[in-house]
Image 1 (cartoon, rainbow, N blue to C red):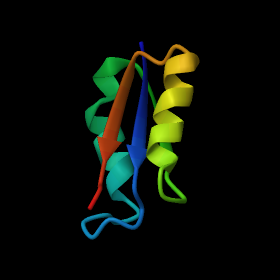
Image 2 (cartoon, rainbow, N blue to C red):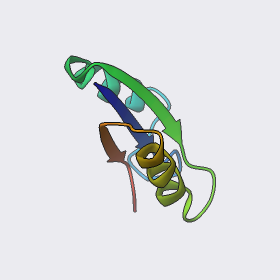
Image 3 (cartoon, helix red, strand yellow):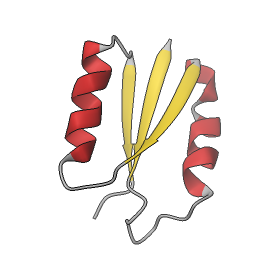
Image 4 (tube, helix red, strand yellow):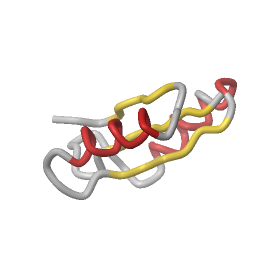
Length: 64
């Protein structure tokens, strides 16, 4: 099973180490990949690409 964790590095609660900890927490889901957003709407773009690529689970983390 593949999982994509989409993290917003500019969220007020985000710290550099947090996405890794969250990814570790979801490790039981199988392969967990982390992608960070760089611009407005990027999370939606990443999620759409994940769907096209057959990723099983998408987790959005950190958003204001």
